[in-house]
Length: 203
Image: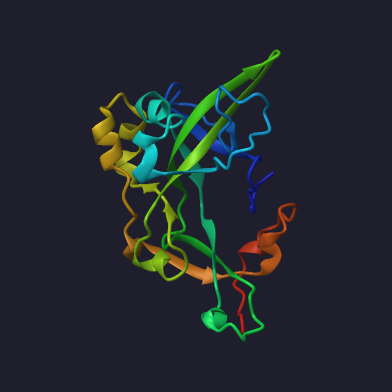
C-alpha cells in the first residue's frame, strides 16, 4: 500500500550500501546498537550534516553505513506571518508539501544501522539534514539532503568520508516547488492521496 504520510517509527523504502541493488523496508528513526530497547528515547529521525563527525552514533555510520531513502516529497511546517505578534490568536503552523518540479522520485542521503537483542533484529535509519535552499528557507530553517541522481551510486560506494561529507548540500531550489496542504498531514494515521491536494490558508 502506498504511503502518503510517513511518520517516525514507520518503515520507509531505502537502499543500503551493503546491498545497493535491493530496496528494503527500514524503520525511520535510528536505533543505535547500544540502545537497551527498540524504543529509542533519543530523537534520531534526522541527523545534522554539520555534526556527523562530532557525534559518536553517526561518525562511524558516515564511514560505512550510508543509505538512500526514497521519496516523492517531504513536509515542513511554517509559522503564520502574524505569529510574531504576541496578541495574535493564530498559532497553528501551516504544512507545506515540498517536491521536485518534475514530480519525479528522489533520494535523501541517510545513515543506517542494525539493532539486535534477544533474537530480534531491526534495521533503522536517519535522514541527513542541512541548512535550507532559498525555497525551503521561506518555510523552515533546515531541509533533508536530496542527492542529485548522478551522485546516488557514489553515495553508496566505498568513497572517503571527506567526499561523502562534501555531498551534503542543499538541493537546487530552481528544481523544486512547494505548496500548502491540509492539516490532515498532522494526523499520523491519515494515509490517503488527498493529503497531497493543495489547500488555501487564511491567516
